[in-house]
Image 1 (cartoon, rainbow, N blue to C red):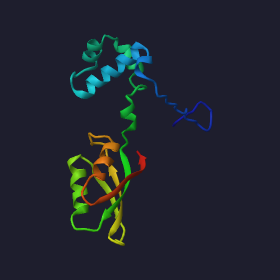
Image 2 (cartoon, one colour):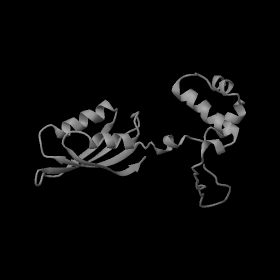
Image 3 (cartoon, rainbow, N blue to C red):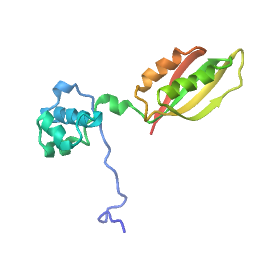
Length: 158
């Protein structure tokens, strides 16, 4: 049985985020970010190795590790929706799908309108969790593909 100690309803504390220049952060938080980067990159295998490399205690690392992230890590969403305007020609959609596959994108849904006046509208939902490029770079890359008249990010989500 779950108990809230008699306090109903149970409210979740709202999280607030700030964008702060890294040199303004306390040293322990800067070192935490460096240690997490070492672990993520595979340069070190254990937390102990990471904290020794950056010169901080394990307790400080564990205190801050779940509360500090590089800005680009927060911007990388797992599921995005992209709207495209495409020339109505054979192979254009295939080229887009190949580009996304090369960039480790996973297409979840595709909706294509009936072409009018030589163009078709396509809306795609993509799982970007395994993409190495950020979403902005992917959209820019789509925009440059042959037959793509317009590519716009319309939604982000989990």
